[in-house]
Image (cartoon, rainbow, N blue to C red; front, top):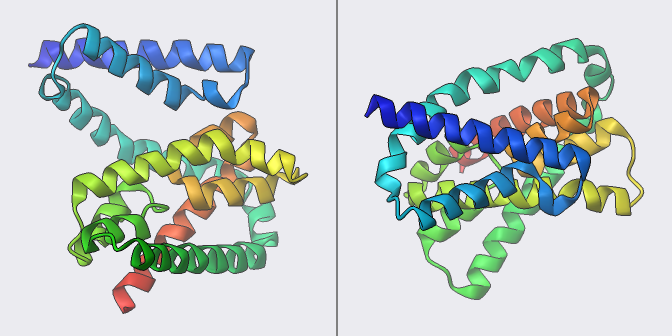
Length: 222
């Protein structure tokens, strides 16, 4: 098992490094590293007829490393703390309004489409990072697998389309861009914004953290 973890982890790192180089040369939304590396891994497993259970221990290893990696996002936040504190009102107002609108729209859409309570629970927490989203979904008896899938999908779509939509809307302020993507696309979007610039990445990381706190308070109170 250890050998399989080392081999698959090495494969994952190699594929992500390759897709990152491709994205740096051709920074197109469809070439976002997380998206393309995921597709390549799926293609590799499909061609090689490798079941997910074989790769699952590697996922657990990567998940274990996700904690330190998330904590490491505090470094750019600390380095840019003065700028972030300067825009603290923007953070609170934007995140509060954005989160409430997202939750309200999701609940309304779920009622109109008559979707199950488990699916609704997963949808309402999709903008939080995976560890927080899983705990919040559990409070509403949501399905953890469905929740994780929707959170990942939300992050991918936000990372791919978010920056391009902001540019199209003529939003070029690095703090505003970081807040927008970090609020919606959590860790995946934050990782993408770090590639755009340190201030964008720091703003996205701060937005991701505050969004998680806000959603936690909200769902604990309702």
